Image (tube, rainbow, N blue to C red):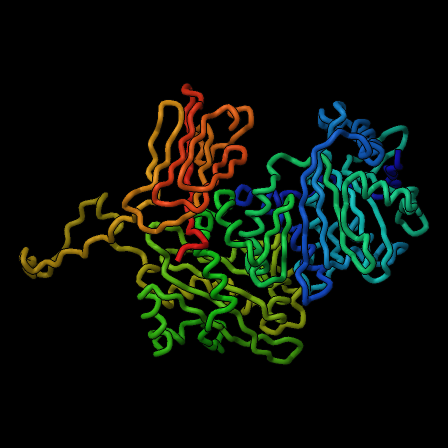
Length: 607
């Protein structure tokens, strides 16, 4: 058994809890938070800027076996502290997630100095091991990995780029209190002994320890000369973390970084990169949290691509307090309004001043705008260096899709200082003002960018931003003054234009007594297409969960023609669908209501 140390606190104060309220939000599922923090950490540690950083997520489920010596010390201490331990432990089973990054620096810093980057990561919560130029800044993102584990444990192994050293440590959350006659701390550490002279731990450093740790948790990187990075093992992860959810979250929150080749995400052997992004996005679209992106993921990627590679019209703003108001009646803006009214994409490069250390710099951000298609929710996202800040949106956001990309290094550094703990929004507080020391008129820039989603909509489609004066006409009968004018004659009234024709669906669904049938719609003309059908028993929610105990594909009758078919759990993926294709599945429980969802996207071979 490899040793875990549960230290005494002596006369020092203790603080219970993991500051989890910043991650425990109903508007963002935990998978999103987990993926955001993991990828952000790897992007921060990117080594060769000419190559993508790769982060790998792998899910494992095995007998406890060789993992037991690395965990039994922490589990014994959790039991002593009367904390929960999964039943699988006593059954000799374990599941875990392995996270590894490549083309990354690893955890650097002096291994014998408490204030180094290495020990900041493991010991100094709330103290960042990053400077303001990187995406982090509060030193608390690592908390998400502890929260992910049912035993609140994480084990890490790093190969460092600066000195090529390998170092390993582990951390498990307990609780403070008197145990065995001593008052214990809130954490225990996978280490050989305490080093009280330096207030750190002496690590397990033998080659045997490192080799057995790699083999036990199946760490696969850093064997070759020159490779470096950080590998983490998260034992007994919560069930809401799953491969499809991780892929979907990566696409929602880091699509620009994936598309421009900065980031590659591998999940259980599936490589999400610039070339596979569109296909995987369509496959996992139903797992994306944002409804606007989930329902129109192709348009979401199209807007980002236009921002990265399309032509942009530059507009300059000198007075940040008045924002875009001075541009409202210019010929340039009126011409762009016409393009938006014609359903064209409009790309803007917004230039404005930012003063740093008494020197005025012109910084720029890119924005892509387009009318929101009828029947779809509005896409509204701002990305800083490829990472989404999902709360930087317009309060009223109808009618206009907008993607904003901030890649200017000085502006990105400034925004990083303005972000909150979970990097979701731009905040304004005394702490923020202190972090912005050196930026002149600093808050006015934050306010300008925070207002930008609303100001751009007001600039290009002001008619739908204004409140509708007739919104309550259907509820209240209010006499209208005609100022003595006679009502218009019937022949003078103009009828409204006819609505656009309904969109022809690619498939027609036919309910069967014990299943369903999807058939190609003879009126549809866009063949070939790809399609994904997901089946589950209704549970009263908008997105029913599926369990292997509900039904197994091997027990159902499945027929298909006119397409290629791949079946995974409760999903039927059809590719190269022609106008003669169909899918029929029978054998479901007739006493339960069946819920099926269809996702169709254009085949890559189509014209």
